[in-house]
Length: 478
Image (tube, rainbow, N blue to C red; front, side, top):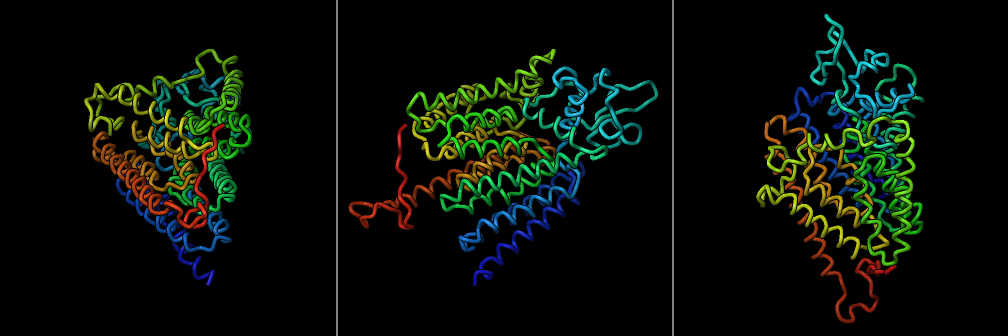
């Protein structure tokens, strides 16, 4: 009987795996972005069905099913070279530059001073420059030279922990391995996050929630195939939030490492402070995180001639975060209902209110819940155009179980792949994120209704527990 209950889930995970492999093998964002998104959409439907069917798997077998499914889903990302992003080429270059004893914050890739470090993989020539993702770089007269690295004329944007990871991969990788070591690193981070989620969720009896991360198509696509370093930030954030309730200093230190991997995990900090009343407790988290941040930035600041923030300010401007009237998808939902000139003030007001509510009313026993609210709200307010940013959000969904926030990750993928096809990023972003916001509101309404119908009234059954036997959460102020 147990095998019969598990079989549908196994078949759905197998179908998801096959579809992912076909998407990686046949899909190309430059030739057919709409077709590639269509394949991804099928993957998301199979993912939803697989997670739903997991409800019928016996509890004692759920963890094993989630982990095994996560292994095969993750492995699909290793079956092809990066399909929708060239960021891993910058990772490889930054690692190579550091291995040569040069700060990655001092020279852009196209700088002639770094010419001795170039090879035919990252800097092809002649016929190798025919790809749509190639960018021309200065070369001797009569020679055609280009690079696979995006934005080769600007400094790197990645924080120190990410740069340390790039250096480690370069040192450990055999010659000629190219993009594969970064994909393997992404696979290890992805599986590490799955294991961390299972450990955190085991004591709460909700290990099936880990499938929201382990089987989500965004993970093999963005964390493994495209090898985005965001996966390392997500892993560190999950571990940090998992231990911060019992070890404030260690949790804060790990959050510091997460932030200095890919700045976005700073959105988890309000969750880590949720419901905390004692200044000493909050200071343990904040000061340990600040100390780690300073410690990892210091070595790069000492050896670099330029700013260790790199291209961050230029990137924000390039991506439209300083222009509320552009046709890019930034602030799409706010601009849908407000004049452009009101967008940034409204952003500040709404975000400040959400952070205040999470810090004031959040549960100190469930810091990931507040972290998910803040992170998801920021995504809905900023409506970013890059799908891999949502890896952090997916990991937080795996901790908290509120599946409706996954629509934000799907909206990011739609915006990223379909904007070039339609030619109007603002319309695509508005439509995609509006759908995601609707899903979040629907999920909130459903949960409110269920909570109202389950909460005992009067003397009820006398137990003070939910109908499923679990106690109602008790708030503890610190």
